[in-house]
Each structure stands twice: as structure tokens, then as C-alpha cells.
Image (cartoon, rainbow, N blue to C red; front, side, top):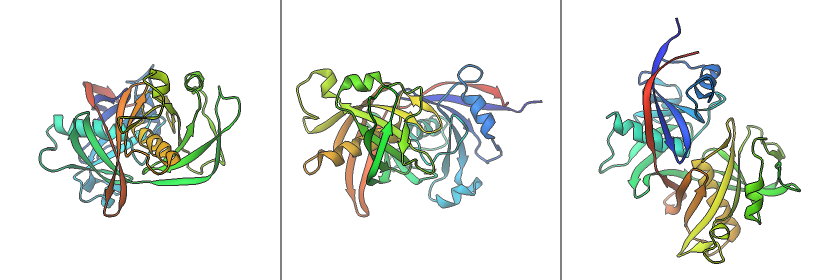
Length: 295
């Protein structure tokens, strides 16, 4: 008989996940089982799965011994990914609601394939320190359906890979057909997430310019590696803000508001002893819980 497991559905700005509690690491979900759970017609439906497992129960968790809990994030096609900015907030929300962890005076530490991440509360819900980031200025071009010619992009690594492309007209952003995966040249060896950005002010007609009251404001759409277009991508939001900040040069703000189809997220860049860190903030919600038979 098929194995039945408990699950909870969660979402952060429309980026949705099937959360599977597996504290002792007893489950070995195949790529096909993950894909079946995430199927929006024949399964629960989600952009990915979050397996809740103790770091001590995983070989991968040996790299994050300071975090009791490890976020085993898988994309909708079953492939494993290093990090998920929306997912880690939903993961934190689940830990707190299930009374598996507390978040009071000290940050909540969560293990990921991109290392241990620190989660705190803030006005938008939760804020996660994504850590150090890297900018790749090598020549990259991206062709997407709906654009007349390939456009240059910049590589941003925030624990997982991103290519960010600036568009000059909000109408171009709206006209993109992201049902088809954009083509990156040169092709990244392990794939990449792809973001397209415009200034948010250009849409809202709140005056010219990219910065409002010292806060940068942009709007973004994303094609997620292993998923397709999603309503939101937390690490993609951070990467987009970092790319525009990089292009803006000296005097660019360290605080950003990023609008995605699923809502609005905040990004901050702060100086730490080991270098500049990027922090992502936004809401997280648990939608419903149940049981499901694995394929």
C-alpha cells in the first residue's frame, strides 16, 4: 500500500510549498514523488517541498551543526536547491506553529544547503540573513519570448545562482511570456534563476526616479530553475535589488522594496565583520494541513 504522510501547505507572497515533517530523516522522497506532490492538477500543488528534518539526521546537515532544524528544499520538478528565501520564512513559521522551535530573544537558526541562516521577526513578518553575496560582471545575455532582442544580464549569487536583466519599459515586463524558459548565453552549468526588473515608480506614477524616501523601489518577474514562472522568489528578490544597486553605483540605497506578482518584499544590505550581508523580509502563512498518499 502507498505510504501516507502528514503535510502542511504554506506560502510566502504566493510562492507556495508542501511542508513535510520528517524530524528523524526517515523519508527518502524520490524526484518523482516530489513532482507528484507539487503537481497542481493531480497533486496538492506547489512550487516546491520543504522537508522538516533535524540536521543531525542528515549527512548534509553535518555542515550546519549549529542549527537543530534543516530545510530540505526541493523544486517542483524534484531537484534539490541550495536555498529558498520565501521557503525559509514559511519553514520558520511552521517550526513556530508546531512548537518545534522558539523565536524570542535570539534568532532562529535554520540549516540549508547554502549554510546556516538566521531568521528574526520584523514588521513584514520574518527577516532572513541570506549572508554574503557575489556579483558576476562577465558578459551574459538572455533571450526571452516577448523581447525583441537578447538583453544583457548580471550574475548574482546569494547562496543560489541568479541572472538579473533590467528592462527599460514596464510594458516589456508585462509582455514577457515566461511559460517558455529564457535562454542564457553562456549557459550556466547548473542552471540559474532568471529575473527581469523595472523601476516600480514607472508603474505607479509616483514621480520619476528609482528611489523613494531613501528606499529603492523595483518591480520583478522571475523564472525559477526547476519550477517555471512563480508569483515570487525570495532569493530572486534579493538578487534583483542587489543587481540594481550594483548598476546604480555609489550612493545607491541599502534598503529596497521589491514588488512581485504575489506581493511586496523588503531587502536590506548591512555591513558585517565578514563583509556585506543581504537580508530579505516578508510574510509567511500556513494554509491548511492534511495527509497524502505518496505516489
